[in-house]
Image (tube, rainbow, N blue to C red; front, side):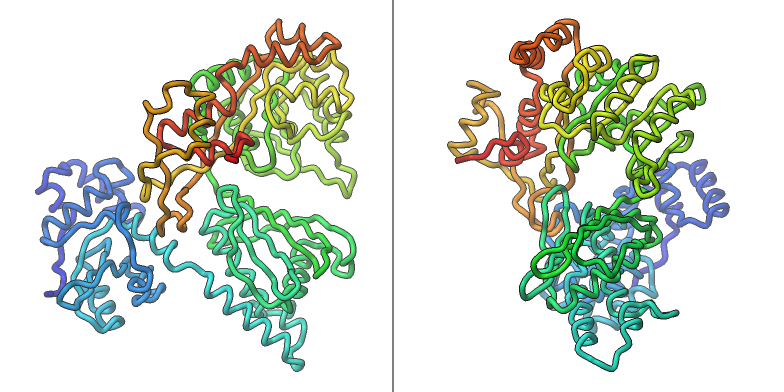
Length: 569
């Protein structure tokens, strides 16, 4: 194939009717001002889509355009081009053609240097195809995973531990300039891979003969790699040093935190250590500070739930509780609400452990138990700061709950979270904590319960026939309409790590503390309260909302059953 030819992108898009002269003039001025690529300026200005540019280039150069969303990659073939040049030249090997040449997808088929360099590296004839840069880079991230690199670094650390001449400080990266210490390189690679895979937690688990490293992705744990058990103490020691924990204490659990930068993005890491039979287990929760806040319209609430939630947020006082297990997206929902409420006329104070999002205009307080900066102490002071809205990270005990509820009863809007299974059990949980019945009845405006379900990967979604057990489970919500719907599942592909799922969406239910519900709560017989509350929520439960996502093809029946605590026998 002859080398690529240079193309003036602006002229090409005007020629094909995708751009106007005026738009090109504006984009050229913006390019001159910012230094960004012209194609990126077109896309970000909304003049033309990334796919539109790629297809226009393909037509002009008479080469194929490949949509990587529906493309099934061949990892062994792709890896013929190493990761570094693939990223540098924005290129991937897509296929081996009948004549023995390789089809290479690139986002810039006019780059002569990239063409020559790729030909030199793979030493084969190449045929170019056009792909969009965003799809290409997403596939590069998935194909060139760091599992083998992490395993290699773990073996290197094992070898160093067996070398008695190596200084322990050098091994851990404690000496100046020791950024290439084995344990430092291992942890850096683990963090980079965890962030790339959108992991929320990293688990280092010492077993009898090995150290297992697992990532929690979309709420489910996946084994990343397994290393020699010898490296476990060195990894735990380095992490404890990073988080300021007591390195001499190995018999008791410890908790801490530290901040790192992964590929330039600040990440807040919460760390917990636990002494186990074969060493210290370390679990880290990753909080990416650069993650953008979602708006309430984007979290996936059904229209009726969203309307009621917004109505509760508009009230000048009272308490709104968001409930669910750890990792169910409660904080994300509350911050979406704060983002909507945030204005120059309102003073908003948050009391959290830790502060998970940074939001301009808010007064955010980080609880620090070690110096007696507790939830209770901070809350007492907060109420003297004349706030309009207070966010309490969690109703964790009777004292915190009572202070929050008094605030809700005295003219403040209070938002908080609680760990309960559903909305109906939340008022009862507060009573069990010792909060007076009248406080719960007078202060709580609304309880929103939520879960996160995994969403079917669009790249490998396929039709699915429910099993007899799933069929019966669906009958409870759908009745005779079961066969009127089509069901789907993810087959598993490289885009989703062969899980069949990519990303998560919320499912919700709410309990409005109406007059009838409040009256029932004031009765000694909690059975009456449960009856009235469930009658109010009929047809609008977590289970019902999960089935809504099933029948619209967004999630699987198995996933809906999982979050509803119902499993096929």
